Image: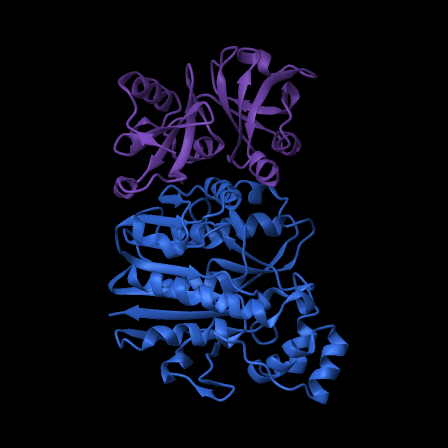
Length: 318
Length: 173
């Protein structure tokens, strides 16, 4: 899918110069990110820190009490397992509780993607491009270690790293296969739920990696978008009738989000279900109008939702 | 990672160990398979409905590795953690002080002064699960002394074999 580019304006040039971005990117942000000035200012700050309680090991109240006794200040969020870390007297990845897998450091946006998956005990779940395993461990937690989770990660180093996280979190219902999502049909089965947090151009995590302000190119968006279309098609084929596919990225680009999901909607057997968080998905971009159902998808913005940038679409496969 | 049913001999070693740690009843109806990894035999706990997925493809990793089989069964950190949470008795455990907890998590051995509690009748050269004051399993060790001698001051009395900090050290390495 070709990346839409627009002629530069005085506004885009001035913002690009002020915040150190390439002009083409700011020019696009002005067309799909609400309140772009505030957004760019927020992207300069370190993202909020969240932790997810691993209820396979400890209750929410016990962990909260333990961390608060050490001087941590935690605030509840829309998800009961996730806390915003307001203050930490020490590195949050260096506590005994962290080493023991009693919590996982994970952005709220990423947890919301798992929440949208709506998993239940004894289901079969497929998690595509799963490393480092944050969402996989949350899925296992929501399933209380029942059923089965198949996690795919083609890269050996990342797959190995994932096994440490699964062990640390006490996950027993998961098998990791070194497989690309596009080859997942080799598993020979269909799933109740499929999660595809697709490899993307990562516009949403610029606060963690500022080099992307200028290293990111229109070609990256196009490359990712083409790959995502293939992945999402493959993922949709692996869902049992009546099951759910959650498609997510940490990019703001419509070519990687709404336009990828729209490519699936032509068959008429897939619908986009609403999610109770975030801003509505785009229904138009550039000179294109999208399927009206795409407003049910969700966009999470740092300046509006205090998360890293994220896109989530919950698709019901009929 | 190729999984298989444990042999009769392996099953005996596993069951003996589970009984020793007071978790035999918990594991009685659970599926445990063994897998050869890096020249050792790992014991994996996994739900039975995961096994059919191995028919077409071999997984890179599956289930929770609860321990390793050599001449005897040694619990992994994940296994020790599970045992400590589900055990119906407290045999073969030691509990260490808060200061010692940090040292164990860096892989250091346990000084006698740091042990605040130990199971009755521990012998020399016995495998033990190391707990912190909150009863979390933070390591697996081997006793260097028996009984009350475990508490002797200014001497290492338990060798730390595995610790929960290793997840982060190994993941980073």
